[in-house]
View 1 (cartoon, helix red, strand yellow):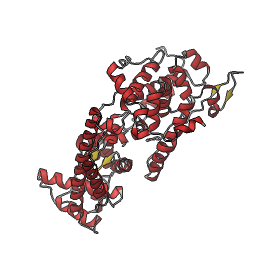
View 2 (cartoon, one colour; view 1 turned 90 degrees about the horizontal axis):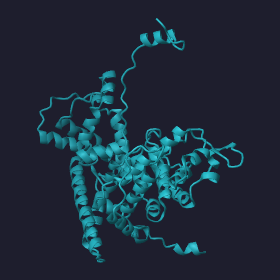
View 3 (cartoon, helix red, strand yellow; view 1 turned 45 degrees about the vertical axis):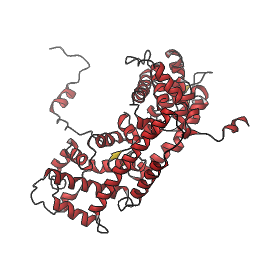
View 4 (cartoon, helix red, strand yellow; view 1 turned 60 degrees about the vertical axis):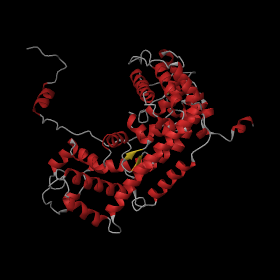
Length: 445
C-alpha cells in the first residue's frame, strides 16, 4: 500500500504501543466557583460535600483511600467532639449559632437600608433614616466583636462549616454508624483546602459574610474571567465609573482590555514608525500607548485593587497561574486605536504580535465586555455601584466597537435604549456621591 513520504512508521508504532494517558481532573477553585456555590446552596457543608465528591477528589481517594476518606459523613457526636477539640476556649456551637443569627440579621438590615435608599433616590428625598443606619452599624459591630468574629478567617470558616453540617445532620435525622476516631477521617482534600483559601479572601474583601454573599459577592458570581474578584473590584472602582461616565467608548474598551491581556509571558514588541526595527515592548507606549486618562486609571487600579489582592493571594499560598492578578496596559493602545476605527492593516502594521494573537486578545476583551454589559441591574447592585448603568452601557458600546472584522465572532449586542441612556446619564460621575473629588481646583493650577 502507498504511504505518504512524511509518515514515520516508528512514530506510528510508538503511538500504538504507548500507554493510554490517564484521565485527569482540571477542577480548580476560583472566586467565581466559590461565589456561585454559595449563591446556589448558601451552606458551607453542602459546598464541602460537592467538592469532596468531585472527580479530582475521587482520583485522590482512589490513589490513597486511607489518607482521604471523604465518603463518610461525620456523626453528630463526632461534630460535637470536633468543636470541643478545636475550640476549647468557649462554647463554639453556641457561638456559631449566634454568629449565624447575627449574619442573617445584618443581611436583613442591609437589605432594608438599600431599599430605603433606593426609595429616597426615586422620590428625590434628602432625609435619611438614621434609625436603620444605626441598627446596621450596631449589627456590624456585634458581628465583629462576637466570639467567632474575633477568630481568624480560616478558623471561622471551619466553625461555620461544622455548624452547618451539624444542622444538616439534625434536619435529615441521619442515623450514621459509629465513625472511626482515626486522624485520617479529619483530613481535608486539597480541593477543599483551596476552596477555603479562596473563601477566606472573599471574606477579607467583603464579598462574603457568614455563608451569604454580599452585593460584591453576587457580582463575582455573575462575572466570567480568570480572576472574577479582580474584575469585580475593578468594576466597582472609581476609575471604571469615571471612564464609563465621562470617557470615550475606545478609552473604556482599552481599560477593560488591561484585565483580559495575557501576553505577559510572550516576547512581544512593537514596530517603530521610522525604520520598522524592533524595540522592547515596555517602550511601546511611545508609539501606540493608551490615552493619558486610561494610563492614569490603570495606575489607580494597580495601586488600589491589584496590589492588595496580590498580597492576599500570596499570603494564602494561592497559585498566581490559576488566579492571575493581571492589569496589563501594554496593548491597551492597540485596543483603543481599533475601537476608534483604525483598520486591521493599520493595527497589524504597528504591532509585532501575530494576527491570531491579536484576534484572541480582542475576543477576550469583547467577552469580558459582554459579561459586564449583561450584569443584572438589581437594586442591591445599583446601591453598591451607583454608576452601574453607565458602566453597562459603556461596556455594550465598547463590545460593539471591537466586534468587527476580523474579530467579529458574535451577533452584536443591541444598542442602548433611550431609557438606558437616561439611566446611564443619571449615574454619571458628577452625580455620584461616592466619588466626590475635593481637589477639582488642582487642575486649574
